[in-house]
Length: 239
Image (cartoon, rainbow, N blue to C red; front, side):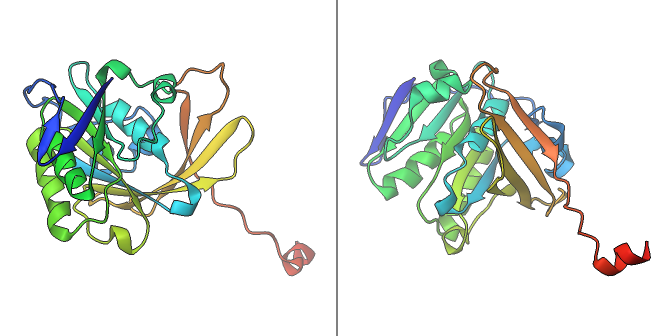
């Protein structure tokens, strides 16, 4: 694990090697129900993927982690922007993220943050950049998209629902909401809300096991089954 700071227009201690663009144009998570939703059944490299959530329901970092792990290659790194230093590296490690390939980005100001995110997205030694940027202007959103295209990795932006996420330039956008679970299983509703050619509007359920005896990648994506409406008294009487 390495720490990156940004100050006065400079990235400090970022030493990832500039590598050639990967041959693959897309990647999959290995979860069939989830992979069926984005355009052409896969997540595009060289693109931004946004995860929207209600701030009162928590930040779905697990989904960002799932995508980053799926996009990572053996020779490229993951950058996670953490301006408030809220991440706990041992927890990321237990979730299956290699700390040897992880850089934590600690920008000092919102202006530094957007600039540093763009620099990491444009680096060909980075497979995934995860960030929860401040409110973006249309120009800033487009800037991040172009940086991702140049770098060949992916940007995973955690953003709140509502006006704060109005401007975007993302290949896919996802709405993530908590769903009823249990002591052993945590469930989240995952809906594709933007992605040209994808199954926009379709929702699946992502299950994350809380069993400490399970492997760290023990995640299951399943089709969401619509609740059957209850029969009316009239219908029951006529049956």
